Length: 90
Image (cartoon, rainbow, N blue to C red; front, side, top):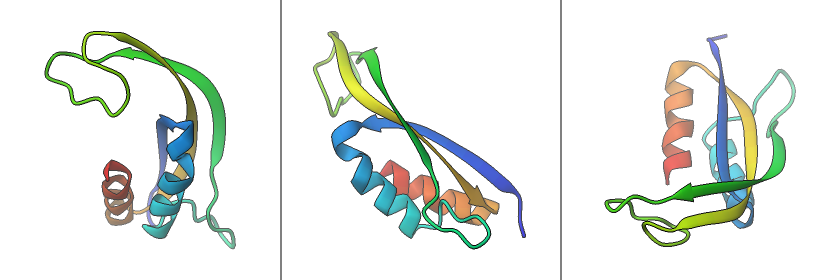
């Protein structure tokens, strides 16, 4: 068994199901005899996108306040973790 890494990310509430599906397909959330393990917490996020940003939500230079979720899961092994992070970026 390789090193276990913890992955924490924030995502819009509307996108979380698709994101979880993608990272689980890439190998995240496996622990002993369990699969698709994660912990999700709702919250409110805020940000101002800079002038060179390409925001998926909101506009550049404007304060945005959005409902988001924090998702925590784990990955085993550096190769597997890299695959999961690549899936998360898509």
